[in-house]
Length: 409
Image (cartoon, rainbow, N blue to C red; front, side, top):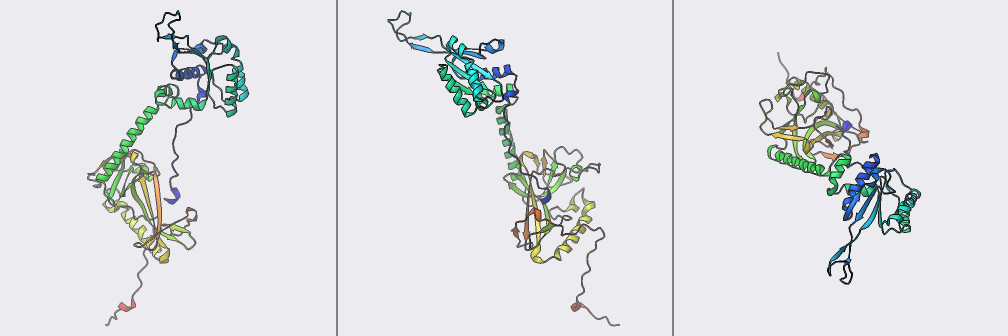
């Protein structure tokens, strides 16, 4: 309804990965394991785990094939045979910090100078749990050149996330952060199949403008409502008959409201809350017979007031609502002895909104047959229609003088 329309659904994405929450040694393990595919290594050593690492959180030796052997060299190799090489030494440095400004980056690299020169380090991978600014990156590469390194790479938070989101690293993503994109993809595939299955069943078994019984799959009191009168109506009876309007892009659309409405020349408007022509014929329902007379009286009272309004100000407020495809468990086209209409079983049932996730109100003016849709401002809703009066009685019809007949003695 207009005053309780559901808010827009927020798009759901993956949350950021909090590398800073990892234990320092676990962060080193993660970076080292991500580095396995970075080069063709002869070996990778977890030097940082022992404590005294001389600046090497991990040390790696890259396989390098030397130039083709010269037969004149006394190396024992045949002509054209590739000679082995001692490999290139790489230094992998890890910093689990929330921020690394340029000066701090420069300080860390300057602290590696002795190890780089003593070990003959070829390249460096500098990984951190934070993002690097452009100035920090510029300072890093400047210092790397100053140290005589041939290759230098910075793996900040963004680069680490990019690597973890690749399918080949899905196992690491699960091991360190507890979720898997492969599992999520399979779930998306399963969900899509379920949505399409529900859509096909609805297309086969549901007829537009026919009543459908929507039931919560977990409602164990059917066909009797819950005895606890303190519950909201939607919780006391977790099933309802609604008129099916057809398939929509977001699910199965139902007519849940059709009320007398009024709109004044200034755009103010109101609707008759006490009646609802979208409700099916309650006298035919097993559980609503006691309410039939009350609903008829409500409608007559509201209609009398509605007919007293200027014709150009009379209208209808119609409300459609959508059950998302993913909320549909099964469709029983045969119904039962209580409600012969098809039954749609749903997974979720809210105490206020029932099975629905989207509301679509529309207001028409100008009569029941040739009405036109008009825009209405929720902020201009006023109280025009009267409240329900249990003592209300229809006004007597005025006498027609043309039909009066004289009664002679």
